[in-house]
Length: 553
Image (cartoon, helix red, strand yellow):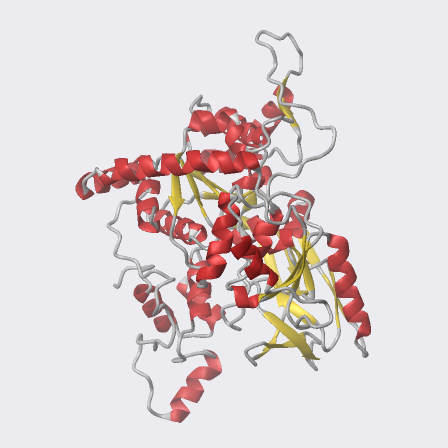
């Protein structure tokens, strides 16, 4: 299924499971759908199964949003208490669309708990209380964490006379699709089959073979050709390990080998302790960041104004004389002053919780878990201690092409996928094909009518959508000039303008365009975007029009 076809399905209000291989464009489709809803005055609830994933999408964890927190079981008392919470009741009632990202890492009983909360708060027996639920992810990637000794799922017997009856608890159905909530919601499957991340045919074939459990000699020979040893591996490229202990060891060892003064940055925070704790868990920057000149670091947040994104790699070359903040040099040779930035949870225009830290982390090494969702030009990968299905696949699929992969080790588990997922994937593909066929038979006029009816049903403001410029197309943002204003021919005039708008009339890069799209979809105003990007408001407006994000007025 193409991205456009998936968007057409989403816009009807149907419950959807959006899936596909890494690089197929799941995040792009969701961002486009969020943009579509917001331009029609509909605010979706954007959540994810983990704090890291929630940080990437600028939303809540589903546990925080629903009020279930870290509960491993849900009693009638719990459900009543959650539904009485003013903040939780308000956000659940206000939502019309619930998006849950990284669904592969959400346990079945957790999805059942969320369903129960939505039904209770919204006073509706419809699945998820009548919300459109959009489940996003790839079950070939990291699964839910298993804890030893967990009990199987136990539905209470009918008529059980228990004063505080357990409604849901840890289940034998590990994956979300095994939940009662999934079965009752009956999501249509949109299985994306385009590929926009890797551009290497051989590497794509390896990844596809892993998903099909058809890894053969050709694939292992290609991987063997990428083997290296720690001494000859590129030292400035990030290493991926399966265990935190290895990551911490490498980063600290590397930091200690650097001569010179160490500068420490301590995270600041404010707001509700539980929300602050969630933000800290999801933030890739540590609470205490230790740096020295020469340290290899990774940016952990997008900053359009300074032209870096989450995943930008660089080296600390100095500390600012004034505020002592680090200056890094990227691999492209740009020097950037990295100042503290905020991670926050906002609701109804108010900041509920906030943390502030220099958006960096030591990047000689990171864990595979923390790399999920990243795209890396190159990585040194150690798969010798892989202990979980999907872990090796996630690590390999972070890299854009085979030439950027440097393997330190590979064990038997690294190229394996969960046998249950392999079988379930065939089912998902079949349902997706049926969905594509069914919607392909609907006329464009009828489909538009369905889109309009859903917007109106949610109390939104209907408007036609203009054709979108796809961010993965060849000419997206690269080398294009800002045509919002006539470029001033007087050099002095341009310098004066750039005293206020640092990047005025500069060419838009692909990274800047992507950052603009992401921040715009967070609901920032043109004035705020102008400040973030260092460009004139007219230039921001023109770029948004060119990207199809707003109408030309």
